[in-house]
Length: 354
Image (cartoon, rainbow, N blue to C red; front, side, top):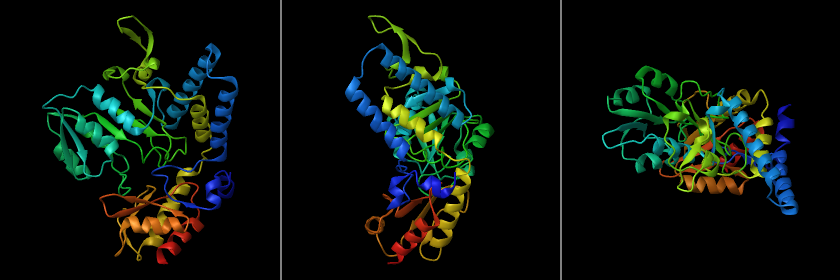
């Protein structure tokens, strides 16, 4: 598949320079078709009966296998979730953190991770997103390092797996801006969250949680899919592996659409996205203050000169160039995917210069 053929999969690219996959990736036509066809099938034939349930369960198995293959994990280590926030909360609640326990995180984390941390009983130790600062913050009370392999603010890459190995502290990796954007495996992480709707271009409210040892997390919010049998008093037999942690239902349309999205990714996706991000840094340099380091990630953030970030985003949107403001950071963020063309970046620059 060529870049032109890949771009033709996404109807939105016919009109819009879509540079916001860090929030939501573009929907490919086969993904949208899978959603629509499933809804129409449900409307005509209903959503009931044992065959329907069995088919849904089989599709869930397929989705776990696909996510596992994506990050070199075992399907038994995969729980289907609704988001990376969902996955972070499952881990943080399930660890049973107590007063006196410490969790090390950074100043550049998304609330999807910080919210569950703030709701826990642990002391949250916040440091700069620097490997040396993270190492120095680890003490005998540290139960968890919780951070992002790729920071949502600047696109900087952190060596979290190496930090976990060096310190011996379990690592929760918020993979929202990593999985699907840069080569990412579950190796070295005790817990890895995946967003389905961002760089993987799947439907809304999709994701996965990879757990190295599913038995180490307590189940705090069991769903119907977390059990194999239960008693009238609520006692139940949990599913084997990470399925015991799954929080809820995915429709057949969502499952089919997610599988379609994962099957569309070309072998050259990472190289193309890196090249686009590097060119983005180059064309923005000299025009604005680029804060993203020159490393192999796909986010490029910049600080506008004399203009509010929200105004920049609105002005670019009027020119059909979609980027994102980072509230409270004074930054505008550009997301470069494997579908990003040189023309998209030229349109970004032209709109900025207008």
